[in-house]
Length: 238
Image 1 (tube, helix red, strand yellow):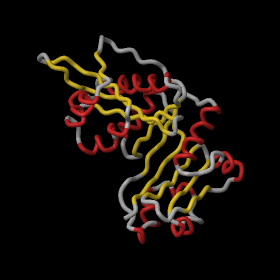
Image 2: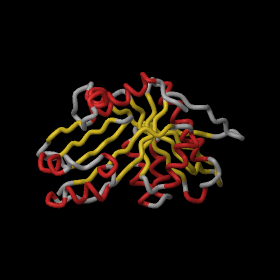
Image 3: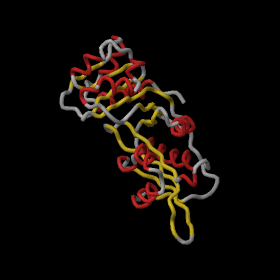
Protein backbone atom coordinates (compact mmCIF):
# COMPACT_ATOMS: atom_id res chain seq x y z
CA UNK A 1 0.00 0.00 0.00
CA UNK A 2 1.14 3.55 -0.66
CA UNK A 3 1.78 6.10 2.07
CA UNK A 4 0.05 9.45 2.29
CA UNK A 5 2.62 12.31 1.96
CA UNK A 6 1.57 13.52 5.38
CA UNK A 7 2.44 10.13 6.86
CA UNK A 8 5.92 10.29 5.33
CA UNK A 9 6.43 13.64 7.04
CA UNK A 10 5.32 12.14 10.37
CA UNK A 11 7.81 9.28 9.95
CA UNK A 12 10.62 11.73 9.20
CA UNK A 13 9.68 13.80 12.24
CA UNK A 14 9.70 10.76 14.53
CA UNK A 15 13.12 9.67 13.30
CA UNK A 16 14.52 13.19 13.57
CA UNK A 17 13.49 13.34 17.21
CA UNK A 18 14.71 9.78 17.82
CA UNK A 19 18.16 10.75 16.51
CA UNK A 20 18.29 14.09 18.33
CA UNK A 21 17.96 16.18 15.16
CA UNK A 22 15.94 19.27 14.31
CA UNK A 23 12.31 18.46 13.49
CA UNK A 24 12.72 19.55 9.84
CA UNK A 25 16.08 17.85 9.35
CA UNK A 26 15.00 15.14 6.90
CA UNK A 27 12.86 17.48 4.82
CA UNK A 28 15.66 20.03 4.59
CA UNK A 29 18.16 17.31 3.64
CA UNK A 30 15.94 16.12 0.81
CA UNK A 31 15.87 19.64 -0.60
CA UNK A 32 19.63 20.19 -0.24
CA UNK A 33 20.74 16.69 -1.17
CA UNK A 34 23.19 16.66 1.74
CA UNK A 35 23.54 14.03 4.46
CA UNK A 36 22.46 15.08 7.95
CA UNK A 37 25.16 14.61 10.58
CA UNK A 38 25.19 15.01 14.34
CA UNK A 39 28.43 14.59 16.29
CA UNK A 40 28.03 12.94 19.69
CA UNK A 41 31.21 11.96 21.50
CA UNK A 42 29.29 10.29 24.33
CA UNK A 43 27.12 8.01 22.20
CA UNK A 44 27.34 4.25 22.63
CA UNK A 45 25.84 3.47 19.22
CA UNK A 46 26.59 4.84 15.75
CA UNK A 47 23.43 5.15 13.67
CA UNK A 48 23.03 5.56 9.92
CA UNK A 49 19.44 5.98 8.73
CA UNK A 50 18.08 6.57 5.25
CA UNK A 51 14.34 7.19 4.80
CA UNK A 52 12.51 8.45 1.74
CA UNK A 53 15.68 9.63 0.04
CA UNK A 54 17.25 11.51 2.98
CA UNK A 55 20.04 10.14 5.18
CA UNK A 56 21.47 10.87 8.61
CA UNK A 57 24.56 9.77 10.52
CA UNK A 58 24.96 10.14 14.28
CA UNK A 59 28.20 9.26 16.05
CA UNK A 60 31.63 10.54 17.10
CA UNK A 61 33.09 13.33 14.96
CA UNK A 62 35.95 11.10 13.80
CA UNK A 63 33.45 8.61 12.36
CA UNK A 64 31.49 11.39 10.65
CA UNK A 65 34.70 12.74 9.11
CA UNK A 66 35.74 9.31 7.85
CA UNK A 67 32.31 8.75 6.30
CA UNK A 68 32.19 12.09 4.45
CA UNK A 69 33.08 10.68 1.03
CA UNK A 70 31.21 7.38 1.29
CA UNK A 71 27.91 7.14 -0.63
CA UNK A 72 24.70 6.21 1.17
CA UNK A 73 24.45 2.83 -0.54
CA UNK A 74 27.77 1.82 1.00
CA UNK A 75 27.02 3.43 4.36
CA UNK A 76 23.90 1.30 4.62
CA UNK A 77 26.04 -1.84 4.74
CA UNK A 78 26.82 -3.09 8.23
CA UNK A 79 30.40 -3.94 7.28
CA UNK A 80 31.03 -0.28 6.37
CA UNK A 81 30.07 0.95 9.83
CA UNK A 82 32.14 -1.79 11.44
CA UNK A 83 35.22 -0.60 9.50
CA UNK A 84 34.57 3.07 10.30
CA UNK A 85 34.22 2.34 14.03
CA UNK A 86 37.09 -0.12 14.39
CA UNK A 87 39.13 2.29 16.52
CA UNK A 88 36.09 2.78 18.76
CA UNK A 89 35.57 -0.95 19.25
CA UNK A 90 32.60 -1.12 16.90
CA UNK A 91 30.66 -4.38 17.21
CA UNK A 92 27.22 -5.97 17.03
CA UNK A 93 23.80 -4.82 15.82
CA UNK A 94 23.39 -4.73 12.01
CA UNK A 95 21.26 -3.43 9.15
CA UNK A 96 17.46 -3.39 9.23
CA UNK A 97 15.05 -2.66 6.40
CA UNK A 98 12.34 -0.18 7.38
CA UNK A 99 8.71 -0.64 6.35
CA UNK A 100 5.81 1.72 6.99
CA UNK A 101 2.03 1.96 6.60
CA UNK A 102 -0.80 4.32 7.51
CA UNK A 103 -3.55 1.85 6.62
CA UNK A 104 -3.74 -1.93 6.20
CA UNK A 105 -6.37 -4.45 5.11
CA UNK A 106 -7.97 -6.26 8.06
CA UNK A 107 -7.25 -9.97 8.19
CA UNK A 108 -10.09 -12.13 9.47
CA UNK A 109 -9.39 -15.46 11.23
CA UNK A 110 -10.95 -18.60 9.76
CA UNK A 111 -12.07 -19.66 13.24
CA UNK A 112 -12.74 -18.05 16.61
CA UNK A 113 -9.54 -17.18 18.47
CA UNK A 114 -8.66 -16.07 21.98
CA UNK A 115 -6.34 -13.07 22.25
CA UNK A 116 -4.62 -12.18 25.52
CA UNK A 117 -3.31 -8.70 26.38
CA UNK A 118 -1.32 -10.00 29.37
CA UNK A 119 2.43 -10.27 29.88
CA UNK A 120 2.60 -13.88 31.19
CA UNK A 121 1.52 -15.36 27.86
CA UNK A 122 4.04 -13.23 25.92
CA UNK A 123 6.82 -14.24 28.33
CA UNK A 124 5.89 -17.92 28.02
CA UNK A 125 5.92 -17.59 24.23
CA UNK A 126 9.46 -16.18 24.32
CA UNK A 127 10.52 -19.28 26.23
CA UNK A 128 9.26 -21.42 23.36
CA UNK A 129 11.22 -19.56 20.69
CA UNK A 130 14.93 -19.48 19.67
CA UNK A 131 16.92 -16.75 21.52
CA UNK A 132 17.91 -15.06 18.24
CA UNK A 133 14.24 -14.63 17.31
CA UNK A 134 13.38 -13.37 20.79
CA UNK A 135 16.19 -10.79 20.70
CA UNK A 136 15.34 -9.54 17.22
CA UNK A 137 11.62 -9.06 17.93
CA UNK A 138 12.18 -7.61 21.41
CA UNK A 139 8.69 -8.09 22.85
CA UNK A 140 9.90 -6.71 26.18
CA UNK A 141 10.39 -3.31 24.49
CA UNK A 142 6.94 -3.36 22.85
CA UNK A 143 4.50 -2.46 25.58
CA UNK A 144 1.27 -3.30 23.72
CA UNK A 145 1.06 -7.09 23.21
CA UNK A 146 -1.66 -9.22 21.63
CA UNK A 147 -1.03 -12.94 22.07
CA UNK A 148 -3.08 -15.60 20.29
CA UNK A 149 -3.64 -18.48 22.72
CA UNK A 150 -4.92 -22.01 22.22
CA UNK A 151 -6.73 -24.21 24.75
CA UNK A 152 -4.75 -27.43 25.17
CA UNK A 153 -5.45 -29.98 27.90
CA UNK A 154 -7.23 -27.41 29.99
CA UNK A 155 -4.54 -24.71 29.81
CA UNK A 156 -3.99 -21.68 27.59
CA UNK A 157 -0.92 -22.11 25.38
CA UNK A 158 0.49 -19.02 23.57
CA UNK A 159 1.02 -19.52 19.84
CA UNK A 160 1.85 -16.10 18.39
CA UNK A 161 2.16 -12.52 19.56
CA UNK A 162 1.83 -9.27 17.64
CA UNK A 163 3.00 -6.19 19.50
CA UNK A 164 3.90 -2.54 19.11
CA UNK A 165 5.65 0.17 21.08
CA UNK A 166 5.17 3.91 20.69
CA UNK A 167 8.01 5.95 19.18
CA UNK A 168 7.89 9.66 19.96
CA UNK A 169 4.11 9.41 20.23
CA UNK A 170 3.97 9.16 16.42
CA UNK A 171 4.96 5.67 15.27
CA UNK A 172 3.81 2.21 16.29
CA UNK A 173 7.01 0.16 16.09
CA UNK A 174 5.86 -3.42 15.46
CA UNK A 175 7.10 -6.93 16.05
CA UNK A 176 5.71 -10.46 15.72
CA UNK A 177 6.86 -13.68 17.40
CA UNK A 178 5.47 -17.15 16.61
CA UNK A 179 6.07 -20.51 18.30
CA UNK A 180 8.28 -22.48 15.84
CA UNK A 181 5.89 -25.46 16.01
CA UNK A 182 3.00 -23.24 14.84
CA UNK A 183 4.70 -21.36 12.03
CA UNK A 184 3.58 -21.40 8.38
CA UNK A 185 -0.08 -21.48 9.43
CA UNK A 186 -0.85 -17.79 9.01
CA UNK A 187 -0.68 -17.01 12.73
CA UNK A 188 2.17 -14.51 12.30
CA UNK A 189 0.27 -12.40 9.80
CA UNK A 190 -2.89 -12.65 11.90
CA UNK A 191 -1.13 -11.56 15.11
CA UNK A 192 0.61 -8.78 13.20
CA UNK A 193 -2.68 -7.60 11.74
CA UNK A 194 -4.27 -7.44 15.20
CA UNK A 195 -1.39 -5.36 16.61
CA UNK A 196 -1.28 -3.15 13.51
CA UNK A 197 -4.94 -2.20 13.70
CA UNK A 198 -4.70 -1.52 17.42
CA UNK A 199 -1.80 0.86 16.68
CA UNK A 200 -3.70 2.52 13.83
CA UNK A 201 -6.74 2.93 16.09
CA UNK A 202 -4.45 4.71 18.57
CA UNK A 203 -3.58 7.25 15.85
CA UNK A 204 -0.09 5.92 15.12
CA UNK A 205 1.68 5.34 11.80
CA UNK A 206 3.05 1.81 11.53
CA UNK A 207 6.74 0.94 11.42
CA UNK A 208 8.33 -2.47 10.94
CA UNK A 209 12.06 -3.14 11.20
CA UNK A 210 13.49 -6.36 9.79
CA UNK A 211 17.09 -7.52 9.63
CA UNK A 212 18.08 -7.47 5.96
CA UNK A 213 19.07 -11.15 6.18
CA UNK A 214 15.82 -12.30 7.80
CA UNK A 215 13.80 -13.38 4.77
CA UNK A 216 10.85 -14.55 6.85
CA UNK A 217 10.48 -11.22 8.64
CA UNK A 218 10.83 -9.29 5.39
CA UNK A 219 8.20 -11.46 3.73
CA UNK A 220 5.80 -11.00 6.65
CA UNK A 221 6.08 -7.21 6.45
CA UNK A 222 5.16 -7.33 2.77
CA UNK A 223 2.35 -9.83 3.38
CA UNK A 224 0.82 -7.50 5.95
CA UNK A 225 0.87 -4.72 3.34
CA UNK A 226 3.63 -2.44 4.63
CA UNK A 227 5.77 -0.51 2.16
CA UNK A 228 9.57 -0.35 2.14
CA UNK A 229 10.78 3.13 3.06
CA UNK A 230 14.40 2.97 4.13
CA UNK A 231 17.16 1.30 6.11
CA UNK A 232 18.73 1.63 9.56
CA UNK A 233 22.31 0.47 10.13
CA UNK A 234 23.79 0.51 13.63
CA UNK A 235 26.97 -0.46 15.44
CA UNK A 236 27.66 -0.52 19.18
CA UNK A 237 30.77 1.16 20.51
CA UNK A 238 32.85 -0.21 23.36
